Image (tube, rainbow, N blue to C red; front, side, top):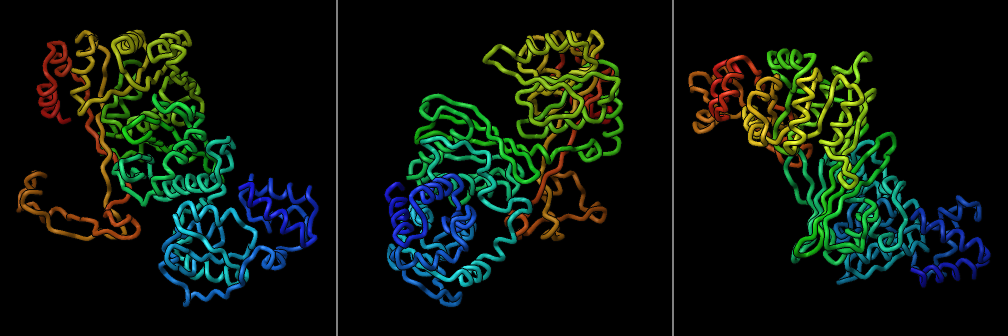
Length: 529
C-alpha cells in the first residue's frame, strides 16, 4: 500500500496539482475514510472539480474505454458482488483468463484494485471510463439489486463509523468484507451471524427465523484476517487464539442503534465466531403483540399483577423468553413501583427500570446481585435466569417476603419447571407456596404472506393435528411455495405459541407430593392448560 501511495503522490505532483503536504493530507484522509481520492481532493478544496480525474488518466497508465451495457461480459459482472461494485464505482466489463477488467472514473483509486484482487483471486486491470458511462452502467446492472436493499442501510461506509482503527485488522479490503457480512445479515433480518472455519472452506451462515442459512463465503485465505477484524471490533485480544473470548460491537446506523454480542471458540481449523444481533431501537413489544390466545392473555395478566410470588417463563434458548419478560415489565411498570432486574446480558434498556449486568469476573453473579438488590427495597424483581440452587433459594425467599419475582428456566414444558427447581434442591413445599404460574413458550415460523397457497394436508398430518377428515370443512390449510420475499423458504417471520400452567390448589398438592412432571402435565391439561 505504501508503494502505491508513493506512485499516486508522484503522479499528482508531476502534473503540478499539489505540493507534498497537501498530497500527504489527502492520502491520509483516504486511508481513514476509504473514499475515492479525486472526491477527497475536491472536498478538501485542493482542486476545483472532480474532473481532475481526466487529467490523471495518462499519468496513471490507464486507457480510456467506452462502456456500453450490452457489450459487458456477464461472467465478469458475476465475479464481483453488486454492492461492492456500486460502492467502489467500478464496472467489471471483461474477463480474460485470470484477468478481470474493471472500468472506473477515478484513475488513482488504487485501493479498489487491491481490494478486488484479494477477494476475487484474479489479476485486476483498471481502465478509465467517463463518469456518465459509469453511472449508467451501475443503474443498468445493479439498479434493481440496489433497490432491494433494506431501508435505512444506505451504504457500507456507514457501518464503519464506530469501528476502531487498530493495526492488525484495519486492512481496507478486510474492513469492507466484514462490513458487507454484517450489512447483509441486517438486510436479511438475521438474528445471528455464524463465522465458521472448516477444513477446505470458510463458511458464513445467518440464522433467520430460527433456521441457519449458508451464504457465499469469502475465500479461505482471508479467514485469519476477517476473524482478527471481528475480534478487534469486539475489543478482544487478537493474539489469544487458544481460549474462548466474549465481546461486543456497537454500531449506529442512521437512527438505529445495534449491539452485536460476539463469542469466539477455538475449533479444529481456526476460531469459530458467533455474533448475536440486537436492534435496540427496534424493541418494544407489548403483551398485545405477543400472540396470546384471549383466555391465556386474560389469565396471564392476572398473574403478573399479583402483589407477590414467583412467575417463571420457560423454553429453550432463542425461544423469546427475555422478550416476554421485557413486555411484562413494560406492562406493569408504574411510578408507584420500584423494579430492578439482573441480567446476563442486559439486552435492551427499559425506561424507569433499574437494570444490573452480571459480571462474574468481579463476583457479581445472579445470586450475589439478587442478594444486594433486596436491600434496595424493590417491589418487583426480574432475574434473567435461575441457574443454581443459591439463586433459586434467594428468589424463593424473596417471593415469600412480599416481592413479585420473574425469572426464566430452560425446560421443555411448563410442568418441567417445577421438577427442575426440586432437582436443584428447592423443597417441594417451598415451590408450591411461591410459584404462582409458569409460562412455557416456543417461536414458530409463519407462512410467507406473499407466496402462500391453499393445500390439502396428508392423512399423516391430520393424525398429527388430531383432526378428523369430516372436520376439514372447518379449516383452511396453507403453505408457502417460496418467493424472493422469503428467500424461497416459504416462511417469513415468527410468532409465539404458549402453554400456561396456573398453580391451583390441586396442582400444589401434587407438587408437595413431589410427583413427576408427566403427572403434573396430565393434571394441568385436565384443568384446561
